[in-house]
Image (cartoon, rainbow, N blue to C red):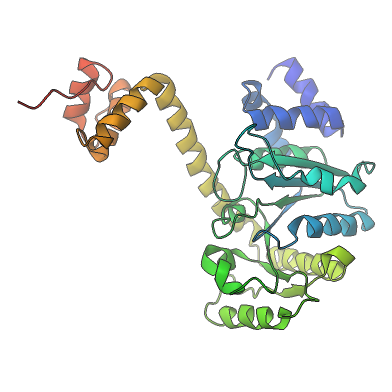
Length: 346
C-alpha cells in the first residue's frame, strides 16, 4: 500500500468528510486507484450495521429513510445514507437528487448522505454500492442505510448486501401486495406499511399476513409489520425498535455470520464475473469484434452458443489449459486470429 493511500485511509478513519467524499467518488467512478484503496479499507470494515430499504416507486422510501436517520441521531448513533437513483440517459448521473430531499441534515456531522446513479445496473442498486458502504463503515458510521432505486419487482440484490432488509409497501397501489410479491416479498426481514393513514392499510396488512402463512422462513423469523406515516414521523420509533429486535434475534441465534457468508458468496461470484468480463474485453475481444460478431449472429451466419464457447475456450488456451468445451474449435480460431470471420459456405 502506498504512503498516499495509507494517509488517505487514516483520514477516512478519522472522519475527514473530504477524504470520504473523494474516496466515494473514486470508487463510484471506478478509477484505477480505487482497487488499492478498497484493499486497504476492507480489513478495517465490518462494524457498521447495513440496513436496506426497498419498495415500489411512490412508497415514500426517501422520507422514511430521512425520518429513520433522525431517530438514530436521537439515539446518538452516526448514520451513512446511500440513496440509489435512476440514471439520467443524457449525463449518466442520478436524476432524483435524494441529497436535495434530505437537506435538513446537511449541518449534522453525524450523518453523511450520498446519491448514486445505477448506470444501467439492474437489481435496484448501483454497481459500487457495496464498496461505498465499506467506505462509510470505515469512516465510523454506526449504521449504513441503503435506499434502492424503486424500480419494482427486481430489487432483490439488496438482500445480498444488507444485514437487515426492510420492504416498504403502501395502500392504494392497485393490486397492492400482488404487484410486487415476485421476489420482493421473500426478502423482507421487516415489512413497513407507509402512508398507513390511507384507506386500505388494513387490507395490505391482511395480505402480508396471508402470504406469511404460505411459507415459513428457514431461520424461523416472522417478519413484523410496522405501520408508519413517514411525513409525520409516525411509527418511525416502532420501526427502529423492530430493527433492533431482529438484530437481537440474529445475535441470539448466531445467524448474522451465516448471513454474511451467504451474501459474500453471491458477491464473489458477481466480482469474478465482472473481472473476467473486463479481462476478456481488454485482452481477447474489442468493440469492433463485438459489432461484427453481433451482426453475424443477427444474420444467422453464426450461433451465439458456439461463439461463447469459442471465446471462453480461447481464454483457457491463452492460459495453456485445456478448455472444457469447444477446445479444438477455440484453438483453430485462436491460431487463425481473434475470432476470424467464418468461411463462406460453398
